[in-house]
Structure formats: C-alpha cells, structure tokens
Image (cartoon, rainbow, N blue to C red):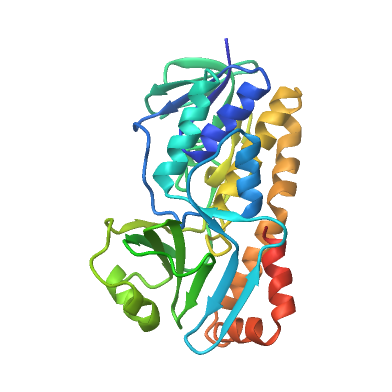
Length: 337
C-alpha cells in the first residue's frame, strides 16, 4: 500500500514527496510531463523559501539576491534582506534539482495524469494506483480542486503574468520591481549572463506592448529575448478549503492570491511540509488549520498590497510611500523574508 500518492510533479508535489521520504513514508508522484518543465514564473526565491529548499536537501544553482528595489522611473526605494539572501533560479534548474533530490531518496515518479479520484474511509485510488492518502499538487488551475467541488470563483478582474529572459549581465543583485500605471515588471537575475523579466497586469496586451511602458528598463534589454514569452493566469484562485476527505491540496492548487510578493516557492514548500507532517502524525484533520497558519502572513500582506495596486488613486502612491518612508519599506520587505 502506497502511503501518499501525489498528483503533480512540480515544485509543490516534489517538495511533498521529499518530505514524505524524510518521514519514512512511501510516496509516488504522478506527472504527465518529463522533467524539467518550464513555466511562467518570476524565478525569484525569497530567503525563507531558499532556507526551506535547503532543509529538503535541495540546492539549485542560481544568482544570489540581496534585496528588493521599487522604481517608477522618478523615484526609487530599496531594502536589503536581513541576515540572509534569496536566489534567482531558472524554473527548469529548480525543477531539475527537486526532481533529482526526490529520485535520490527513492521516490517513484510515474508518467500519467490524475483525472478521477475514488475514495472510501481507508484508501484513495487515482491513475490506477491506490494509496492511503492523495496530495493534490496539480497547479494553479487544479483540475482536482474543481473535481472535488473545492473551486471557489474569485471576484474581480484577473491578473495575468508574462515572462521572458534576456542575455545580459545582471546590473544588480536585487529584484527590481518597475511600476507603471497598469503593470509591474519584475527583473530577476538568474545567472551571470541571464535575467528574467516578468510582467504582471490586469491588461491583456502583448509582452512587447507592456515592456514599452517601462522605457528605462527596455533600454537595458537590447537584442532579442533569449527565451519565448510564457504566460499564466488568471493568477487569483480560491478554494473552499484545502482538504476533501483523504485528499489534501498543497501549493497553488490550494488557492493563490498573486505573484506580487514573490513567495510562491516558499508557500509550495510550507504547505507541502504541513500536509505531510499532518499525515505522518496521523492527524489529517489538523491540516486546514496548519494551512491557514502557514499562509496567513502571505495572504494578508499580498491582499493589502494588491488592493493598493488595484486602484488608480493609490497605485502611484506605492513607490512614493516606499521612497519617503524607507524604514517602513525595509520592514515590509523583511516581513516577506
């Protein structure tokens, strides 16, 4: 009998598998695509997320990040991380490092897709496999979340993300966030000759049109993009709860607010670890409360910043406030570490 069947072999699913192996549980990951899988991801890992990866024995190669810089073309504010550093990592490099760590621990990864789940009081069956528990880590638009009746419509207009890489030496060891009236551009160095530029906005425009709204940034990005444009969205996803019987939702499948604060990987590892911890302790009923505790700070801070960014009257004040109150900006950045 498999202890934990995991639907999805992305960062959240592989983190859950690694934690299960650490706990002496047999985990099997079901994933339809061969590793590594590239996705539209900002690729900046905050210090807390990096520490969580290291605790799993995962050490991806990347470019150290030492803080955050906001700019609107007129004003700038920056804040260093305190006592730690983050990492800019290509999504493919992160996926490879997680995949290799899981395989080294004896995790079985099988090709397939979980389309239907059957469960009773003792087991759950999916993709032709039966286990005691199922962890759903099948991403932002989780089919399992919908199939289990846990999908909850998100109000308001959706935000979308687009990402491309450029071959240039990083000009900073900070994540730069460039603000325009309708979008943000996140610049993340991922190695010594490559930077990623992700744009988040409610406006669905071509990537080149978005980039033109950031003339100072566009001037630095000479030459063609090094990778194709990849997109994702709408980013806001809600779930009625992170558990349905013997199925526990982790990572983006359990709900997602926005990529604005760059905590996706930290949340993936934190929720995966909480789910496996509850199962290993024989207390699955505690997972919803643990999920809420693990995500509370992220949800509160992201909702607050997203609320300000979503209104034409307050959006221009974000960089101005950070510029005028650097101590407050440092406090906010360090709260996200």
